[in-house]
Image (cartoon, rainbow, N blue to C red):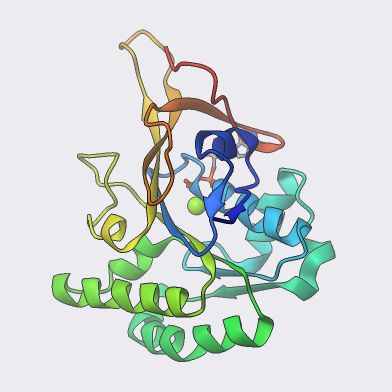
Length: 228
Ligand SMILES: Nc1ncnc2c1ncn2[C@@H]1O[C@H](COP(=O)(O)OP(=O)(O)O)[C@@H](O)[C@H]1O
Ligand SMILES: [Mg+2]
């Protein structure tokens, strides 16, 4: 089984080498936990490896994502030929689904893309009623699977359960799920960040949440340390 580096050493070690090629992985976390940062590492690792990559953003625009990456020392500009960033407006969502269904397979195929980041799917999910939402997610899953890309899809967490995605559906259509969350030991302790691999098909992964930080080189996962 071929494994792709996530671009984060500690996370690769937690996964026993990396993300299985062809997997779709959900990254779930509250605002500010580092979902976009993790996604940018994943894309940058692909670019550095000579792979073609696509970012589908429902949130930040192209310039903002490139600046985010730059602030962590990732130079997306020198890989512009291998990188396609598409921003989809939430307000045009019904339009977006049609656009995704028709354009995404063509963009992936035309480019020969290997990695796809969708950031964040919650904005897209919010536009559908319950039943339609599942169908829309399943449509995206099918497109990514048919195109045989490896993908990360980020999602806001459920308010009452930080391990679950906002609508509790994404985990089911993905091959893997990673939770990013704030962990507080007691009222007096500083809040810490913890990363946990909740599911990863075909991989024997650790289940313990591990501490991580966001630094000026991006996300650093301390896979050998304990949170408390
Ligand atoms: N250079 C940096 N050094 C330390 N922390 C940073 C730096 N840049 C961003 N951050 C932290 O990363 C967080 C943003 O991460 P981001 O990936 O955008 O989160 P999310 O996509 O989950 O909302 C910010 O809230 C900030 O705390
Ligand atoms: Mg984000």
